[in-house]
Length: 199
Image (cartoon, rainbow, N blue to C red; front, side, top):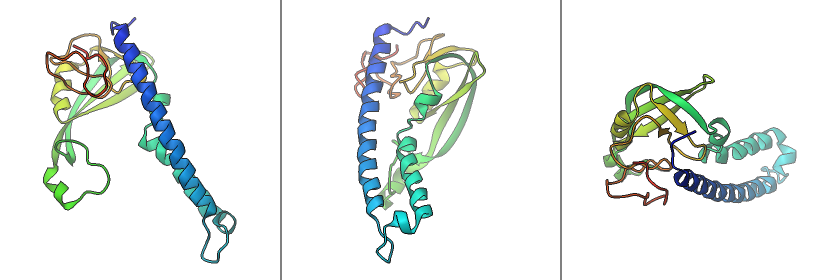
């Protein structure tokens, strides 16, 4: 039985379901537009592409089918169910990225001044069944995670969260399991997710 407060777990599940619904709607819209366009596409002779070039059609169809699954990380809910585990490894690294946050899409010239090496901490946990999961903490979350997690700590991971709850110690600052927001000491609820903070 986890020591994570029931109200926090309920809020995480509620937020996670809301995100899944939004992402599901976006995926259906994406499928509706792209698959219709693909089905109505023609080759240079004016023949329907699904008849004239069936191999090309099914390759493009498969790519379009997989894209939202990868982009929205739906696979996470299949391969990261709710589990209890122990922290087995902490690894430090750095990589090229936006200093203030992830830069999505086309990187314009002005974005290059925002690019640089960012601090990364990888926290690996192992369940009692021997399954390992690795969580990535970039930028300011990297320093936070090095203090919050130690090898041997017991953690609890709710399936609809993004980060595991540490059963062995409390964080130095309030922390959101949904988005990873590190709040100030006087905050009790995440300003982004409206989920009670871990503190």
